[in-house]
Amino acid sequence: MHEVVIRNGSVLTSEGIIEADVSIDDGVVTGLGGEIAEGVVEVDAKTCWVGPGFVDIHTHLREPGYEWKEDIASGSAAAAAGGYTAVVAMPNTEPAIDNGPIARFVAERGSTAGLVDVFPAGTITMGRAGETMAHIDELWDAGVRLFTDDGDAVGNAAVLRLVMEYVAQLGGVISQHAVDPSLSLAGYMHEGAVSSRLGMYGIPSAADHVVIDRDLELVRATGVRYHVQHLSSAGGVERIAAAKAEGLPVTAEVTPHHLMFTEEDVASTDPDFKMMPPLRRSEDREALVHGLTTGTIDVVATDHAPHAALEKEVPFEHAPDGVIGLEWCAAVVNGEVGLDPVTFFDRMSTSPAAIAQIAGHGEPLSVGASADVVVFDPNQTWTPTTSVSKSRNAPYLGRSLTGRVRATIHDGRVTAGGG
Image (cartoon, rainbow, N blue to C red; front, top):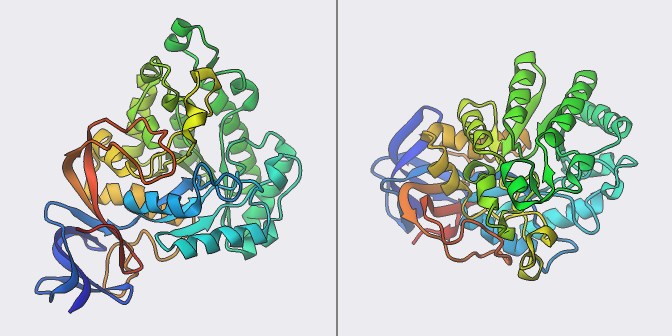
């Protein structure tokens, strides 16, 4: 008898999608095909896609320093509920993840929670202050492969170039929060029709573009692998497409909220729609959907950003930016973009694991491979009403979604669903 058996699914393999059962024992896939014996745990995957667990390369777990919003255990639970088996924890914590011991602390806390593999990102600069290089060697030795001052763009081009040169030699990735602070600091939402109607200061799309343009010039000079976080505009998509056509080592992500919502949703002034970069025009949303479909945008990343109710239950202008999304990302991508299963797993699993250099995740299922698996029903319609996260700042709650995680299996163990 096998430990876990997944029955009747459409399974992603190196040969494409096949109809098969999957058996799992001792943390690895042990069988793939028909006539598989019973399992202690049986998962019915009829009508479901079965593939590598999702990988999020942009998650805020808030620990250390902000555990009242989220901690590594609660964030891991939210990730597992959303079909994730690995996440990259952003370093804008307190203290920031700018040295090896803190990076090891975060990874160890993830291991203790045991629901997903947690890989810490490291800062580009000390304390995310944008002035001096972080302890890159220590971070690298602690397993960090992705470096970002997320929450802030690195404004000092000389410092950024220095770190890019160093990280390029190591083989890591610079991941940029591509929003210019001087163009965004005074704004609350996209600069456009809705901000004008409401009489609020807006944030132009140029806030994204000027950072991307500058950084691409530095990529040309240093050759570093460069990843653009949370694209929000059609102009941003065009810049990434041009950089890839030029042959630059550039990748990009889009969030589920930028795929689903626009500035018109912000017209309600519900603080759950306040985020950075802001929700933009419907034309921008359409460009993001198209870019994800064609592969100009490589991955979907949640930018899961928990905030306590007391922070969000204030007037729109005073609320912090951010929205949680780990539990519903796959459903949003499925419903709003409509990818075929091979492309779906590429954007949600394979490409993010490759960008973040996470071994053992994102691979098509095969006998002997690590048993980090998600069972996803692309047809189920449901309406989420609550979250396992500590926070509830989610515009998805109370909305009908299409597609639901039926089971998440991490290291051979069912960590969510499965019933």
